[in-house]
Amino acid sequence: MQNEKIPPQDSMSRRIFGLNAVGTVAVGSAATLSATNATGSLQASAPVDAKAGRLKQSVCKWCYSKLSLEQMCKEAVKLGLVGIDLLTPKDFPTLKQHGLVCTMVSSHPLTDGLCDEKYHEASLQSMNEAIDASSAAGYRNVICFSGNARGIDRKAGLKNCAAALKKLLCT
Image 1 (cartoon, rainbow, N blue to C red):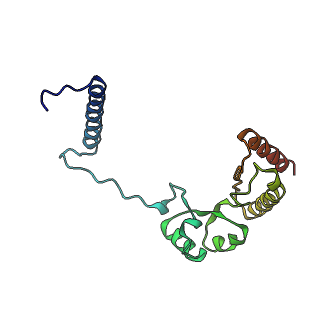
Image 2 (cartoon, helix red, strand yellow):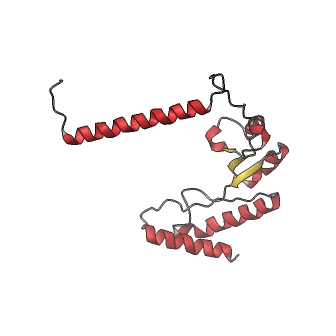
Image 3 (cartoon, rainbow, N blue to C red):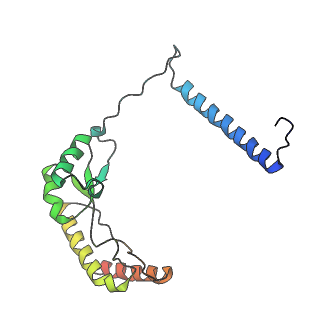
């Protein structure tokens, strides 16, 4: 093994690997040194309280399908979250009971979106209803989806999406 020649491409990648490792150690050492106090011991960073309001975080309900919306709201409040994503207007009263917001209101189905003209009417109706309800509730964000292409090429899908959004802006 000692006399085995390393092919040039391998020695280059090993050299780069070595330089990267040295750089990583240097950065880690610098970070450790900057976190030490005069006695040389590490300083603990102050605990972060999510409820302090510096970060505005939310969670999606669909990730926690085993929890009811009521349970989800209680947990979100405990964690200091500001709201829950991808809910519909029927969920707004429960959110408001807990002082939460719907950070992104759902409208039409993910799969049946604006890239396919046959879904324009239903999608636009759902989006308009979600926009009106969100506005009335004081929420700012409604999501829309391009949908599954189902064989529609990208340029045609983009053109269809733009046409649908123009209709939405004109209503």
